[in-house]
Image (cartoon, rainbow, N blue to C red):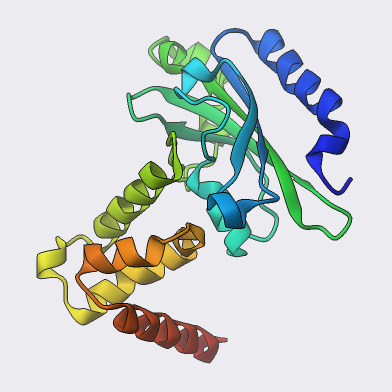
Length: 221
């Protein structure tokens, strides 16, 4: 399969079946990531129970997609990890990538089960949800469009540096830019300009930092 359209009927039927099987609190999403250079991330082309994260067809994917497309994560698929929506819902999620004959991601299926009410139940139910076995190292961002996604990634970068921009040194800003680069933020169209404005640096300085970071990474290998 070279494009998800080739198996459109099966894929859309598959996510609908999953949603019906797990019920109204289970969001199932099909994303097209073949044109990420145009959209800056995966694009939602089919979704069931979108009320779980408040997304719809035409919205962008999460930051995890940017990390895959950036090449920072090789395998990509993540199973049974915990994340949280902007309005506080707790989700148990799974993300699986669809690849073409060359191994390049062309699509993605995401399953997000809202377990907020179940978490409030007793320990027996928590054991049934496999919370102790779920991945705790995933920080996924849900956004309705690529601009919101970029804003959230920039906020994460500041949290990572643990300083407001006004207090950041040159090395602090490099650290924040390195974080954004690893998360695939620069795959978003016109992200460089917004990141420059946020860190109060010129484009020349941004490219200089990125070159330095690349050289430092190569020296560590």
